[in-house]
Image 1 (tube, rainbow, N blue to C red):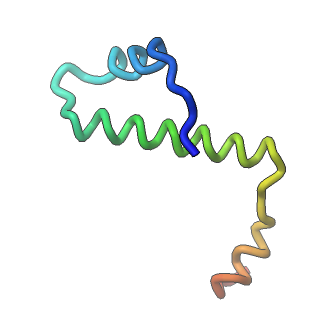
Image 2 (image 1 turned 135 degrees about the vertical axis):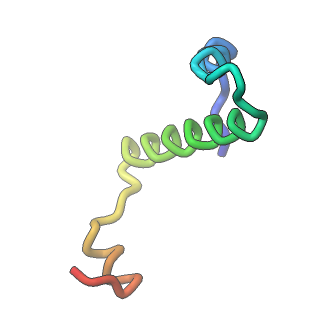
Length: 62
């Protein structure tokens, strides 16, 4: 489920990176951006879980 990328947004990411950034740095920034956008889309669509439900599922303490 990829979202459409706007070239302007890609340019902004690159422009904000330090001069010695690597391809791996760029890929990381793109990955993080996409993960955030997916999370926001899920939240806006109501695809969320209660914290207690997740803790119970994975046996985590309250």
